Length: 416
Ligand code: AMP
Ligand code: GLY
Image (cartoon, rainbow, N blue to C red; front, side, top):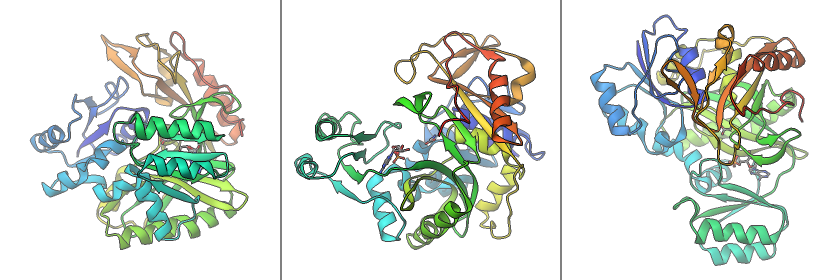
């Protein structure tokens, strides 16, 4: 089989690595890929991101299956376009992708189908939003409606910040349209968990839970990032939490997908908050998480390509996903300056023995050398029977890779 994998992050490195393990796979084109996928077994990078160009590439190269990593092509309708041309592709259609692409759409969907979530209001008009902010309880959460590269959510401790956020989102239009409409939402206190899952539209199969660490510094301090490390499974996701999640979030989501007639054969990622009053859904993503994927797929025993093919054929009903026992800890190494302006252009030195435990993200291959290009540069993953063993293994591997200014949190696997 020839596969086209769309994306360029650490997530795509992990997906490419996993798909390559299937013997049917002859070639994986990664568009545009990164310095890691440039060297992986069976992989070749192709410098394309435009949907129409990807479509032409898929046709000309007789691609058997396209797998989409990030949300943007999905919300831009890549699945609808490929399917209308008779090409096989894994991911939700444009309507399904709105569950991630529009916060107001997803909140209205949750409300309509009784999915447990925070109270909220939607505003199109900055004056009305500000009026509402005069008399609400703080902290409060303001969310840009559209995609904002992970920067569209602000937790406002006080009225002043909330009013300033409305100015930035709705008047100054810092997200170029994405913040013209906002969701203002009740602040929830608790512990977050990521539950990735696969669906064929008839059944949702959850993967192992994961715990991301969003803040840059130890002890969950400092500004938010795309994610600095992951523990899988998430130690706070107990049987009781899972039961609540299945009944009040996952099953109701599936009913909604069916009733709304979404063509959803893809990944749904539930971002949940475990609160005193039960499990609440913070958001849907319609793709795998980054850096969650690097940990979750490391523990998946089942062949991912078989799963994807079964989802496309609507045959997930008799599938059981198998997992390795124990834990996987993923520690992200980032460039100096991240999540502000990252200092890049440095060579990465990796002990070759560890290459299969390292997933490259923000780096390119230049004259045989890996050179940093982004904020989050790579992930190291360690496994173990216990969380502590997995953590120690991850940090041991971290010692075998370096670049100028490399930073990582030292408490992944320890932090609450
Ligand atoms: P979202 O994109 O909606 O998941 O929001 C990004 C991050 O903001 C989440 O991972 C949470 O850390 C935080 N967040 C979002 N909504 C809430 C909420 N209602 N209460 C507390 N924190 C939230
Ligand atoms: N790590 C969170 C995300 O991928 O959205």
